Picture 1 (tube, rainbow, N blue to C red):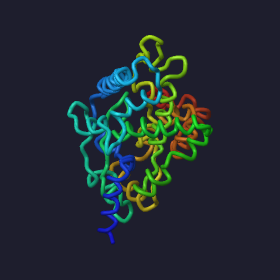
Picture 2 (tube, helix red, strand yellow):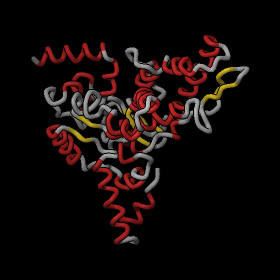
Picture 3 (tube, rainbow, N blue to C red):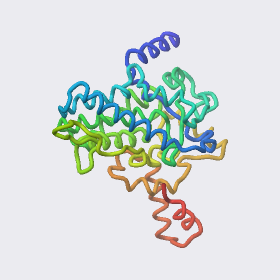
Picture 4 (cartoon, rainbow, N blue to C red):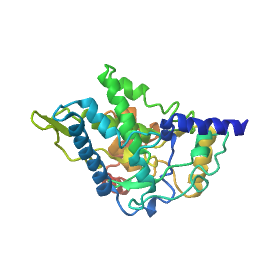
Length: 313
């Protein structure tokens, strides 16, 4: 039965490439080995894609400002088919500083196949340093593809709050039902991706504007710094897991002298983000509330002074 289940999951990965979003990461082990921030290189990669998209539209439609074709040209480099060129590059390039731990040396090392089939088949993703935060390489796919899904749902008339509450898929296909993990960091990334697509051709400072003579022209430089926060880090914005998996992960963390959130003071910052109640984990929210209550009671304590000194991202 286990062998048949493995075959089914492997087939699903090819038939439904979005299973790639079931990747989980370990942002605890080896996080201190990440020294080189990938911000400049990843900014350049996205801006190159946006420039190519403009040229692609001009080639196909001339000066016609067609939003659908513009999106198509952007997704040409990002859409999982079966894997986006951007994510393939991100996983394989030696120009980005990654963690290199496998499943059996990670926080999930003792999780069995029966407890998390997808986790044992596809393994875990890599982590990198981006805008000063430790984030999984899977966040790129969440940002662009799940963010686009959110945008389309809102554009179709569904209230954003309902989308954030109901359409993250972390309770199902891309989360706890396959990997055994509900990632609030993925949900935070999805929301920021929605913000990107909302700003593509709209708002006061869109990425593209329509010129009646030239068609689409690049209007704004992309930077991940506009979107990446500690909420993207599972070691801060703690995931929820199936009970057996949670127990094994907690045991691993305790053995190493860690617990989630790894940086409690960061939770105070991120609970103030727009719509944070939809993507900040209960554990991080409770931690933030305790810190803020402590500051009210003991504003000049050494612990609170240190927390304020480090409470930034």
